[in-house]
Length: 560
Ligand code: DHE
Image 1 (cartoon, rainbow, N blue to C red):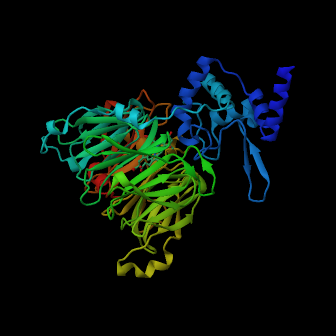
Image 2: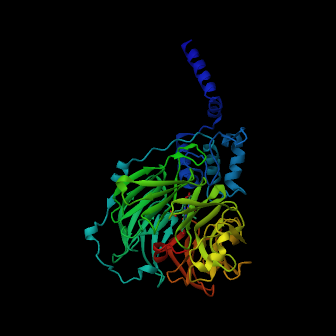
Image 3: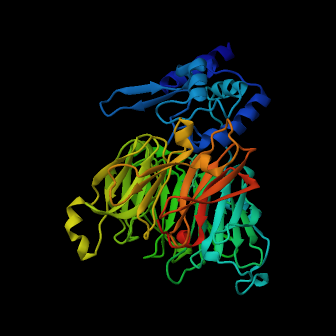
C-alpha cells in the first residue's frame, strides 16, 4: 500500500516536472554490461567527445543525448535524440558518416564497436568527475629545476627554424631541425597530443595533450627535453603564453574541455597559480554545464589573453597583469567558437564559430566585438592566413570543413595606402573554389602562394593532396599536389591525409604532414614554395601519425 502511494506520488512529480518522457526514455534505453560500458566510455572519450562534448550536448557535432527538446523562436518545441534515431540508423551514421560533416568510422572502429557505440549513445551520459585546484597542484612535477637549467643556449642548433611536430597517436612530439631536416629528439608528452605553442623568448615550447597533460620543453638544453609537467584537466586542447612586453615567459594559460575551466601557471615551472571555471550562460541566455575552452591567443598590445569559450559563444579578454585580482572582459559573439588567428595588424582576433557558420572578430584594442560575419558551412581556419588581395586589399582567409570554398574577409588597416579598401572591411570579398574537408590554410608574408589542405574529404586522392593558389590571380588553383605520391611511401589502404601546411622560418619552404594509420611509418614532405617542387621527405620508423607542425619562429611571433 505504502509502495503504491509512493509510486503514484513519483508519477505525479514526474508528470508535473515534465519528466514522464524522461522516465519513458530511461525504460527504452539499451542495457550494457559493466565491461561494455567501460569499453564504450573509452571509445567515446577518445573518438567522439571532441566534437559532441562529454555531456553529449553537441557543438561541432550534433547533440547525442537519448532525448532532447528545444524551444523554437516561434514558440513551438522541437524534439529529437538518439533513441528516436534508433540502433540501425545510428550504426549507419557512425559507419558511413553524413553529408553534414561527420566522418565515417568504418575504417577506425570494428563492426562490433560500431554496434556498441550505437547502443551506448542511446543511454543517459554519466557526468564525469570534477578536477580541483588541489589535484592540479598534486599532479605538478618539475623535472629539471630552473636553477639546474642552462643560462644560455647549450646546443648549436638554429632554434628559430626548429619544428615541434605532433606525433598524434604515440603521444609524442618530434623536434625537427628545419635547416638539416634531422630529428633532434622525440619527447614523450600527453595522450593524442594536440598543439605546441612558444614562449615569447622562443626558449620554451608548451605542448598540450588531449588528456590535459601540459609539458614544458627547454630548447636551450644540449638535447632539448621536458623540464616540467602538470595535468590541468581530463580533456584539453589549447595553451598559450604571456607575450606582452614585460611579461615574456612569465605565465602560461591552458584551457580544458573537461572540466570546463582554464588554469594559469608560471611560465618556467608550470606551477599552477589560478583556476577559473567557464560554466555559465550562452549568448542565447541559457545555462550551459559544459562550456569548453577552445582557442587561446596572447595579445601583443596588452597583457591579455583572448580565451574563446566554445558552447557559450563568450570571448573572454583575461588581463594577466594582476592574476590575484583577475579582470575579465566578456564579449558575446556566437556559439561554438573553435579556432582562429590574428589579422595582419595583430589588433583583431578572428575566430570561427563553426557550427553557427560565422566568424567573430574581436578588437583587442577597444575590447569590443568588431564584427560577426556570416560565412559558408563549418569554417575551420586553423590560424587563418593574411595577405594583400590584388583587388580587395588586406584579407584574412578561412577554409571550411563543410563547404567547397575558402572565404576571404577584408580586414582593416591603419596604413593610408589601404584606405581605399575601408568600405570592404569585415565583408566576405571572395570565395575561392576549393573542396569540402579543408582544415588548414597558410601563407607567409614573403610568399606569393596560398596553400590549403583537404584531409577530411571522403575521396582518398583529395585527402592525400593539397591545393596551391597564386595570390596574384586567385580565380583558379595553380596546382594540386598529391603529397602521398610525392612521399614515396608504400601505397596503403589507410588514407595518408595531407594535413597542416607550415612555413619554415624564412618563409621559403612549406612542410606538409602525412597523417597515416596509427601503426604505419609516415612522413613530412617538404616543398620549395617558389617552385612548388619536392625538396625533402622526412621519414623515420618513429614518424607515426604526424599532424600539426609548429615552426618556432612563426609560432613565437604568430606569423601566418
Ligand atoms: Fe584541433 C587547433 C580542437 C581535432 C589538429 N584544435 C585546435 C584548437 C582547438 C582544437 C580548440 C585551437 C587551439 C588554440 O589555438 O589555442 N581539434 C579540436 C577538437 O575539438 C577536435 C575537432 C576534435 C577532437 O577530438 O579533438 C580537433 N585537431 C583535430 C584533429 O583531428 C587534428 C586534425 C589532428 C590532431 O593532431 O589531432 C587537429 N588542431 C589541430 C592543429 C591545431 C589545432 C594542428 C593548431 C593549428 C595551428 O596552426 O595553430
